[in-house]
Amino acid sequence: MKNTIRVERAKLDITQSDLAEQINVSKQTILSIEKGKFTPSTILALKIARYFKVQVEDIFELEPED
Image 1 (tube, one colour):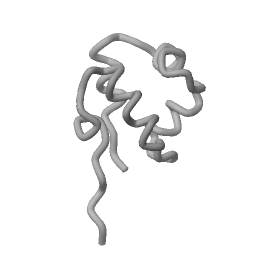
Image 2 (tube, rainbow, N blue to C red):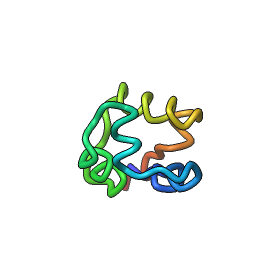
Image 3 (cartoon, rainbow, N blue to C red):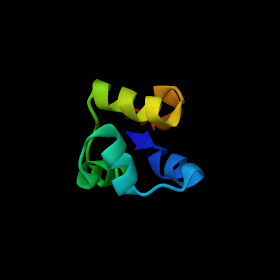
């Protein structure tokens, strides 16, 4: 799953740690999501989208199936 968390963080000039603290997860969780190594739960995806005041689809994109 692709995501634009890094871009959204840059717009607000916040670190992974800042975002993690705001949504109550670890910095490692944010890092793993950004790198595509971890797919967030629906609740976590909604929390991230709510924090950035965008729709979930604006941050997360399913990669095409082969």
